[in-house]
Amino acid sequence: MVNKNKDSSLVIFVDELDRCSKDTIINFFSSIEAFIDIKGITFVFSINPFVVYPALDKISSLDSTNSMLNSDEPYYEDSSGKLFIEKYITNFITLPVSNDYKEFININLKQALKSDVIDNISNLITSIAHYQTMTPREVKKILDIILINSNYFNDFTTTQFASLVIMKRYFKDCMKLFNQVPENSNALIKDIASTYIKYSDTKIPFDVFSQFIAMIGSSSTYTVKSYSDKIDRILYYV
Image (cartoon, rainbow, N blue to C red; front, side):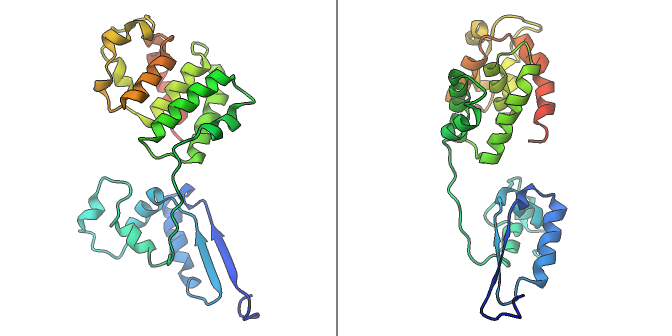
C-alpha cells in the first residue's frame, strides 16, 4: 500500500496492550520489528507503563544481573522494559492522571442508584484516588461489580457492600481493622469502632478510614467477616 503511493502514509493505532498477557506483549513487539522502520508507516501505541514495562523486562538485552531487574516496584524509571520500548517509541506523550471521578461515577450510576448512595461511593473512590493510581476502566469495573452483585449480599445495603468492595480492592489489609473485634461479634461497627477498630493497624489514610467506617457502620463485624472471602473472589479478575 505504501510502496504504490509514495505520497501517502499508513498510521496504525495499537490500543489495549495493557490488557494482554505478558507473552502476547512480548510477541507483539518482537513481531513489529519487520515493519517499524518502513518509510511511510507510523505506529501509535497507547500503553500503561505499569503493565507493559514489566512484561518487556524479560526480553531486554540488558545484563540480567542489573539490580533494577530485581526491583519490587512495578514501574521504575530505569527499568530494562522502559529502555527496551524506547527503541520503538520516539515521541512520548503522557496523559494527565485524574483523581476526581465524581462526574464519571455519577454518569455510570445515576440510572440505577439513589443520589446519596452515589455520593458515598463517589467520595470514597475520589479520596482513595489521591493516594493510589486509578484508571477509568478500572473504576468502571468496580462500579459494574457493585451494580451486578449487590443484590446477592442481602445482609448489606448497597452502600455497605460498595464500601467493602472498594476498600478490599485498594487496601488489601483493610480486614486487619477488625482483628481486635471479639470473635463472632454481632455488634454494629459504629457502636464498637472507637473501642476495637484502629486505623493505625493498617496503611489506610485517615480520611479514607473515616469514610469507610461511616459507610459500613450500620453493618455488623460478623457480616463483614463472613462475606470477606466471597468479595475477594469477585475482585480476583479486576
